[in-house]
Structure formats: C-alpha cells, structure tokens
Image: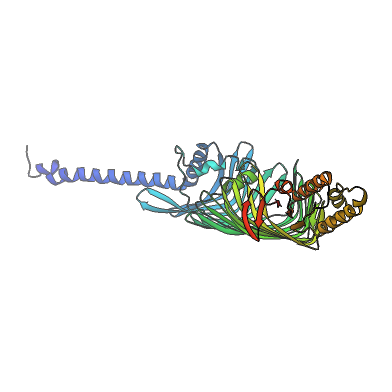
Length: 488
C-alpha cells in the first residue's frame, strides 16, 4: 500500500551524487594526514637520516665519518664533533662544521659553502710527498675519477700535523675561498726541532701566506732557521724571505725570488760566514726538492752572493762577491759570472784583490766549466812555487852568476803574478842544453795561466812556441795563430 511519503523511504537523486564526493574528500583528507605524518616523521628523524647518509657517503670512499647534526634546514646544516677515520688513523676532526645549500632546480640542492671551526688535520710528509691517510678520496666524487668542484671553504684556527722520519711537524692554518680557484691560505709553522738519520732542522719561525686566482698561486714565505744539517752540509742562524708566482697550480711556469742571510755554513772541504744572498729564478714548473730536478726545470736565474769569509780546499778570501746571470735548458745551465775577492789565497799564492769575469756552464750530466779573464793586485806566489819554476835554470862555469840573476829575475816577475811575461832574447847567451832548460821552464810557466811572449832570432826557439808572429822591417809578415799561451 502506497502513501504520500513513500518516496522518502529511499535516497534522493542529490544524495546519490553527493555520497561519492564525500568519500573523495575523506580519502584526500586521509592522504594529506598520512603525508603530513610521514613528513613530520621525516622531519623529526631528519638528523638521524642525515647522519646515516653522511656515514654511507664516507663508506663509499673507505672512510668512517661520525658527527651529530645539530640543525638542518633548506639552507644548510650544522654538524658538531665531526670525525673522519681511516682504520686506526684519524686524518680529520672538527669541533663544528657548517654547510650552506642553494636550490638551482627543484629537488636539486647545491653545496655552496663550508665553514669549519678549529679543525685538526693529520698527514704524512716524506719522499712521496704529502698524504692524509686516505682523506684525499673526499676530493673525488664516488663512481668517478673526475675532480670534485669544491665550494667556498672557510677554516678558522685550524691545526695541521705531519708525521716525518725526523719527527712531527705542526702548524696553524686558516683559509678562505675556493682554493685554488680563488682564495687565501695562511700557514704559521710551530717552532720545531726535527732530527733524522741524515738531517736535522731546527727553526723558531715560519710563515707562509698564499693567494690563488683562477689557478694562479702567488704569495710569500719567511723562515728563521736556527740550524739545518743535510748529510755533510750545515747552516746555522739563517733567515730567508721568498716570493712565489706559479701558474696552473704549479703545473705551469713559476717565478721564485728570495733574500736571505746565513751566519755560518759548512760544506765538504770548506765553510763560509756572514753570507747574504738575493736573486730570482724562473722554472718551467714547480720543482721537487732534489738538486737534479731543480736544474732540470730551471730556465733562468740571476743572483748575488756576498760573504765575509769563505774557504775551500786551500782556496779562500776574507770577503767575496759573486754575481751570475744564468739561463737553463733541460738541465744545461750557463751564463756570465763575475767574482771579486779581497785578500784571496790559494795553494800557489795570493792577492790583496782579485777579480774575474767569465762564462760558467754546467751540463745536464754535471760537468762544470769556466773560462774567463782574471786580474789581481798585491799578488804573490809562494816561495816553493817560485823555486819550482826557476830551479831548472842552471848555468855552467862563468855563466853561473848569469843563471842566478836570470832565475831571480823570473822569480821577481812571478811574485806579482802578472798576466803577461816578456822575454827579450832570454836564451841569447846560453848553450844548447841550457837553452832547452829555459824554454822548457817558460813553457811550464805558460801552463800556470801566464801568457809568455818571447823575442828571438832563432828559428828553433820560435818552433817551441804555440804562436809565431814574424816581423821584418817593422812589419808583420805572418801570424801563425794556434794558441795564446806561448808567443814568439
């Protein structure tokens, strides 16, 4: 039986339409709540997630990283107690480290800066260079051999320690910028006393300040060295200041200029005192510390060395100044050199003042050559050398007195060590035996870096000379040039 309200016992058409809409709303609301819950959970657990991500990132590089994230935001994060280990070694520790992020694209963060407070870095220093117990692996992204693009880095009150065969070397370091792209680096060495099997270094001060700009590094360094010993060479109480300008982080041309003072130095067979030096050298690239490598990449060097006293192997001077202008190519080095000495001494004699200018060369194999002119004032030869040079001059009978006079004349000539000795018919009154003795003695004198010129009418005497100039009626008719030590 139907009533007028029968139609109210079912659902209206409007209800049929609204019901699915309500279900959609509830479903969306539930998803939102779930998403918010997930995000909230992630947000509350973000530090733990970040710590695990850091540990995983280091594990990919065979390192162990520990640290507590104290803050994380879209702009960056802060980590306290950061520690990086490689086995039992701990190459890096920091009280606090902060990273800064930017978002160039959605869901694509970019590391734009790193600030590290009071970090401690440990490494080794030996013939293979500088190593940091595997910390270098952080400079290469995982799964790639390409270099990592470093962000701007700021280091405050950092400490760095190097283990060496001679002991521990330590320093304080500060850095700002994206080194070596563009940045500043300051390093202050702690006083040290390092002793190794063949060396010893002790200094009281060392400061290095470097600036980089697009891979070009320039800066200066100063050291106060109390003592240094390397094998058989020693230096005491020395101070050095140096400036460097290197292209392409040491892979390109480099210029080094310096100024220094040395109180005392000893080397095999000799020593010097109160020395001062300054100069500039150019290299094709940053050299290693070995002398052979330095010579191999040297292209130019200009320097001055002044000493109060210097001696080696019986040679020496109370004061000496050495200047050089050298060029180099693949280890072959040469150029003009000048030496000025006061009260110079040698096994053969000495001089109040001595000066020499000439050309110096050193081959890549180590062969040394010098050719030049020398002048001296107040010069003398030792009595033994004078006796050796004149003793063969012996004359018979009535000529004995003449022989004594001739030996004395030659000895007097040699005392002042002249650059030129003139002999006017020196054998004119001698027999054949004594003529040969005199000519032989004069040739020996010529081998002692003297130039001897003889005037003679005897063909035999002329043939004993290295160069014969024939003169007739006051005119030169021939000049047989072979050498310039013995001229007739």
